[in-house]
Length: 617
Image (cartoon, rainbow, N blue to C red; front, side):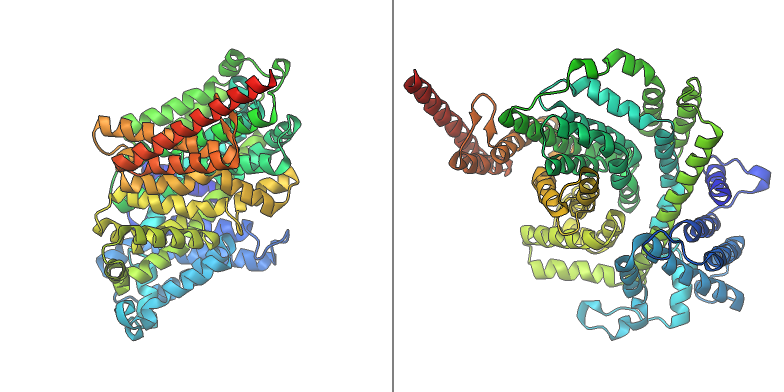
């Protein structure tokens, strides 16, 4: 907690230019200090291997001390590293400290990210050692072992490169905001608000799970922690009104996964994306909001159709809180959310917005005994912030090795050129290859790591092929996230299944079907960026309307239910699905054919129903 507190104070001092005690670390010095502090936290809080045991205390403590000493020494000589060009020629002590820190970064990514991520970091981190012997476009500038160590640790494109810069400048503040929200019982407020709005509706508990998990996750930015926070309340309630265990778990998994695509926070990866694209974070937020809302519309439609087809009801009104009392009780969270959005979107103070919002929340919740920051809650808050930031630093400092290895050898640009050459201008082929690659990498990496890797290799090729830069990066992000709800990995689905007591793989396949819009939406906005708010107002409105119709048709086909018609058969489902997919295609004639199919299916089913009713009479 002491280390975490010092890291947070260091970040606050940097962001607000406080110059406390004359201490104002600028540039790479600040990054080295943060790496040292939070790597030390990672060694003291993340087990050496899976299981309850942390491992030998002496070893973890020794690694923590080494992290503080090596990174602290490098931070203290931050100006020398830059001004004297230590990246190319450094004194012996600097080389030793750099080597120690590099080994510690690898151990940190192994603990926090797992073996797959460690192997990836090693493979690409050591690439400069043998790049000169690689064939074709994989050939690159070769480095000696000492040159590689210096480049990775003392250079500005690897360990202290863009991933770590994003954590230091933006992400720490939003981690603090998410932790404050949870500790002050903000999660309970948003679930109660969702229940007050939708709990009494048909299939109400499922709609509450979708809305509540969506709101909570959009502010915390974490899929798994969101499930563990909301699932113990939402899943039993869904089961109580008749949803099967695997269906309830799949709904929670999809809602929590989609939340990391929902503004205003969107998780770590959106901040990295803003840095790679060289745009303000608010630009990413504006682009992401329509696809994210559409995903939740699709989820709400599916749970409502399932409830209609199976005759499921909502919760009794006696068990549902009233809207106004809930809003009055939750005014501190709404106020802090408004402050966050105002400072983020209007004042454009991206790095400071979560700090202002967190302070407002802490002050506002102090007026109530059940949410004010007591000593116990303050300890929980500090521990939560420390561990969460430590895991991020451990992973992203290690992922910096991937960025550095590809950047220093020059292979990243060559890979994109070769991909364009092999695709021969076939954009659908490139997108399909990118989707499969993103999905496969997402199985073994965090979403942020997967995105960073492909934003270097794949995104430039998509952009050079003529696709919108922002749409191309969002395409990679969406497909990288699918591993959360798709077997065999399906980490979100498996976590929710554990809470629900359902079979993990059955839950995973249900989640994959419920999350189908996540598979389709990226192909829509990458071909027609109107869906990410690029283009004329008329074009944007038209694309949104057509996509909503398509989502309605596709979800109707999957749930065997059409509003105003009722349950439909297999043939009608197939035709309705085909009509929805045709409407998505940004070509007038295919959209017309798709609309005709939908109208025909509805008309035929209504005629058949009337004949059946007449025969029964």
